[in-house]
Length: 256
Image (tube, rainbow, N blue to C red; front, side, top):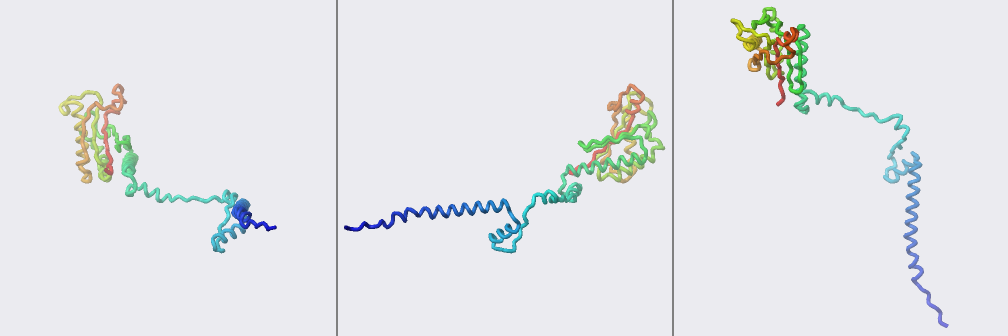
């Protein structure tokens, strides 16, 4: 009776998939062990693992402790010097608007200091939107009622005002000197009407200021506006007194 031949390849070839399966299971086991070890990390184990993976046994990476981070947070230091420098009007990195406002408020501050130091009966009305400041002076500071001749007692204050303008000419674009009156009519041998009176008051003020050589005549303009730009009702003595005034409308320079 003849012997049966053994099947030489069937069973062996069919079991090859188990090699791949075993490798996959081993890798998964290693992966989960690694995850477990990282979730319960120990500083010594972590250093050993990093050293093994990087190939440098001397590498030390500190483990982050949450409580330590809360107790000693990282401090952020802001260099405020750079911020301050950028606000300097001479800094080329600062915007032209910033430089213009810096110049404007410097001019306003100088004018207010002048008013305070001289106890001048005047008001400042700054407008940063237009870079214009109005210095409003009641007419009796410079003139007698119904007259455009500058009072002698006003010479000193006008001399100091002229020097103030001279010192601040680099900050000033223009100065309009406006004469204003109340609604009381005037007509005499010297002044035809309130237009004439207000215009001559403005012109005489400009001429006095120009006695100071530091004042740029091209920046000064006299304007007579009569009674038509009141700041108060003309139906009371107080309102009329407020309307009789000289306004110095000062425009500061701009970067453009």
